[in-house]
Amino acid sequence: MNELLKNEKSGWEEVSQEEKDKIYAFSNEYMNFLNNAKTEREIIKETEKIARENGFKSLDEYAELYPGDKVYYINRAKNIYLAVIGEDSLESGINIVGAHADSPRLDLKPNPLYQEGNLAYLKTHYYGGIKKYQWTAIPLAIHGIIIKENGEKIEVKIGEDENDPIFTVTDLLPHLAKEQMQKKISEAINAENLSILVGSIPDKDEKASVKNNILNLLNKKYGIKEEDFVSSELEIVPAFKCRTLGLDESLVAGYGQDDKVCVYTALRAILNIQKPKRTAVCLFSDKEEIGSMGNTGMESHVFDTFIAELLNKTRINRPNLLDKVFCNSKMLSADVDAGVDPLYISVSDTNNAGFLGKGVSINKYTGSGGKYNSSDANAEYVAEIRKLFNENKIRFQVAELGKTDIGGGGTIAYILANKGVDVIDCGVPVLSMHAPYEVTCKYDIYSAYRAYEAFFKN
Ligand code: MN
Ligand code: MN
Image (cartoon, rainbow, N blue to C red; front, side):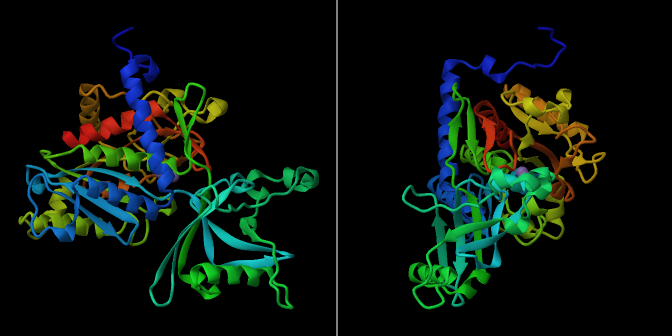
């Protein structure tokens, strides 16, 4: 091989049988994690459990923090920030890996239950960028919470257990879809038709209402009435299990891998950190798929408050120190990348694209239409990250999201960059991103895990 050319080989060509076994074992653990947690609330809960098993304690359990202490903070059950306090003062900066725990889905509308004809439905409002047609005629599950007026929280999860019923959004039969089939894909399914079918048995009273019968069932099971839906967060997600894909078993198919694949790999990486030089921080944000707004999105100041609390509890805080900490900090924005799909090769500039099986994918910038809205990582920082990965023999590729004029996207990178942090996007290439069933490659999953670990240890 010409030494001057960059490595274009598949990562699989370079792994020994022993490494391959490690990669497959790690992927099994990842798939198991995804099968236990499909929504941001479930991810945070599962993360807290795993973190506690590995020596992390919540912020309020510590009066003071010392190097090696492992601490976490949960914001409104939808974000978690984990930190391992370093030997160096936080003043010299921290190393952050940040991913997002939310994924595209169908949310129930505030008044979701209705009857049309002789069937009962729950109406949805989709969350994030979906191709609506992909969400019809597949098995769906309901996950979430209902908060009653008295504050009582009811947890709902229907459709995951083999004995549970599932739900679906029906679609028109091809025989009668002549008109629908002529429409543009974006218009073929009306958002108001993304209603999940929930029942067909009428109530026994004279109105014979299917809706009433469903309300009775819900009341019996959860003690709720119709108005309780307004203070609920019920998310409709695919009822598929995350599974190994392919005859060579090299790939993973699963819902919500954007961005739970980076959540899991970042979590596993920070669990390996004992007493780092620089404080290691791992954060999982919410609302990334709808613009990172709100008090659980990355745009909120709750993360700043967490870091300020670390400054308080390491006894170094003083006015404006938080700003200085951010200016001295580094981050890998751990979000998935659009993997090159050979079936749709025309959207990718293949010299600047992430391929499945070639390792963790770095995006110097994201954005669209001329880097618009992107935080473009500084060349000096890219050099630092490249050196780190090369020294640790971690396969990486440097990519853009697609051809310049075709489209684009964003991550949480710019939000931290705006605070003064050096940030670069670094994650796993995905096929069928935002579809109910997304595909990743086990080699890349493992290389992301190794990349985040090396970054924390640096
Ligand atoms: Mn993402
Ligand atoms: Mn996304």
